[in-house]
Amino acid sequence: MNKYDSIIIGAGAAGLMCAYTIAGHNKKVALLDHSHKLAEKIRISGGGRCNFTNLYTKPECYISENPHFCISALSRYTPQHFCELLNKYNIPYHEKTLGQLFCNNKSEDIINLLDFLCTSKHVKRSMGVTVNNVEQTSSGFRLSTTAGDFYAETLIIATGGLSIPQIGATGFGYNIARQFGIPVIPPKPALVPLTLESDILSMFATMAGTSFFSSVSVNNINFQENSLLTHRGLSGPAILQISSYWNSGDSITIDMLPHTRLDSNELHKDRLHSSNLHSNKLLSNFLREFFSERLSASICQMLQINKSLNQLSKKEISKISNFIHSLIIKPSGTLGYKKAEVTKGGVNTQLLSSKTMAAKNIEGLFFIGEVVDVTGWLGGYNLQWAWASAYAAGNSI
Ligand SMILES: Cc1cc2nc3c(=O)[nH]c(=O)nc-3n(C[C@H](O)[C@H](O)[C@H](O)COP(=O)(O)OP(=O)(O)OC[C@H]3O[C@@H](n4cnc5c(N)ncnc54)[C@H](O)[C@@H]3O)c2cc1C
Image 1 (tube, rainbow, N blue to C red):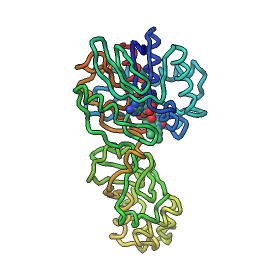
Image 2: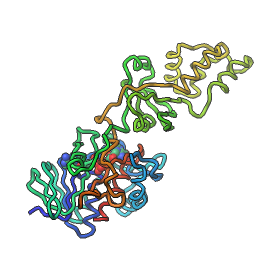
Image 3: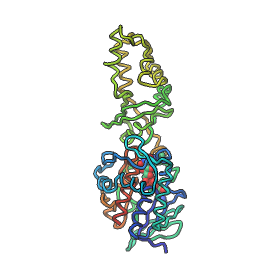
Image 4: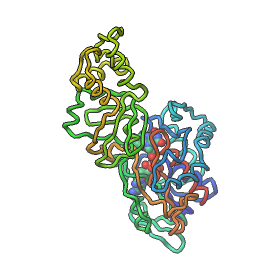
C-alpha cells in the first residue's frame, strides 16, 4: 500500500526542499507531480541560470495581504543557508547585481542537487501522476491518483501558482485550500510585461526595442531599474517590478533620467547662455549624452522637436522635460499568466501558521511556496520564499 508519513504534491522548488527536509528526520516521504519533467520552473528561472536567492532578502521585498506572515520563515532559513548548501556540494555561483545570486553554470545544477538530496534520503518521487481527489481520514489523508491511492498523516501542497501554464502550472493548490475551507486571495499575474493600447503603441513605435535606466512609479511605489519598450508594450526589470503593484486602470509614471534634471540645469543653461559652447547643439545630439542614438532620435521624433538648444522656447523645454521626467502611461493590461514570472495572491495566510505553514483549521495540511499569498520582487526573492517556507514546514513535521 502507498502509505507514507508525508505526501507532498508538487515537485518544484518548494516541494523538493520540503521533501528533503522531512526525509532528513527519518520520515517516509512521497513527492507527486503531474508533470513528467522535474522542476521546470527552476530550469527556466533566471534565464536558465536560476537566480536562486537574493542577499538582501527582507520581508519588505514581499507582497501579501499580511506583510508580517513571511518574517518568521525568512528569518529561519536565510540566503546564507542556501549558499551553505551549494558550497557543501561545490555548486559554483556568483552575484550578478543588487544581491542577486545566479548559478555559474545552469539551473540544472540546483535541480540535480535537490534531486540527489531527496534520493539520498529515500524520498519516493512519482512524476506524471494526477491527483484526482483528496479526502481527510481519521489518520490523515487519502489521495486518489492515476497511480492508485496514497495515504499519509500529513499532506503538503507545493503546486505553485498559475504562471506559465504551458509547463504545468495549475490552480490545484487553490482548489484544495477552498475544499478545506481556507480562503484564497484572488490570484493575479505579477512580474509581468504591461500592454498598451494600439494608439499608444503606434505613438511609441519608433522607440520599440530601446531600453533605458528609469524610475517607474505607481500607487506610491517606485523602482529604479531598466525599462524596455517592446512592440507589445512595456517590459524590463523596472516594469516587471511595478506590474506587481499595478491595478487595472492605473497610470504609471516613468522618469527616463532619474539622476539628472534636464529642465532647470541642462536645457535652460544651454538655452539662456548663448555663448555656451553647446548652444548650437541639436537637441538629438544633446540627448545622446544621456540616451542611445536611436532613443534620442525617437524622443525628438515623438516630440516633433529637433532644433538647436538655443532655439528652444520655454514651452518646448518644459514639453521635453515632462516627457523625459514624467512620462505618464496608462497600460491596457498585462501579458497574463503565459508571461508572468509569478502569481500574486493565493492561499490566505490568515488560516496558516507563519511558523509551520500548517493550516490552522485542518490538522496535517500544509501550504508552501508560491501557492501561498506571499509574492516576492524580481531578483531571487521568490525562490528564497520557496526554500524558506518549505524548510519551515519540513522541520515542523
Ligand atoms: C520564467 C520564470 C523565471 C523565473 N525566474 C526566477 C528567478 O530567477 N528567481 C526567483 O526567485 N524566482 C524566479 N521565478 C519564480 C520562481 O520560479 C517560482 O516562484 C518558484 O519556482 C515557485 O516554487 P514552487 O515550488 O512554489 O512552485 P513551482 O516551482 O511552480 O512548482 C510547482 C510544481 O507543482 C506541480 N503541479 C502543479 N499543479 C499540479 C497538480 N495539479 N498536480 C500535481 N502537480 C502539480 C508543477 O508541475 C510543478 O512541478 C521565475 C518564474 C518564471 C516563470
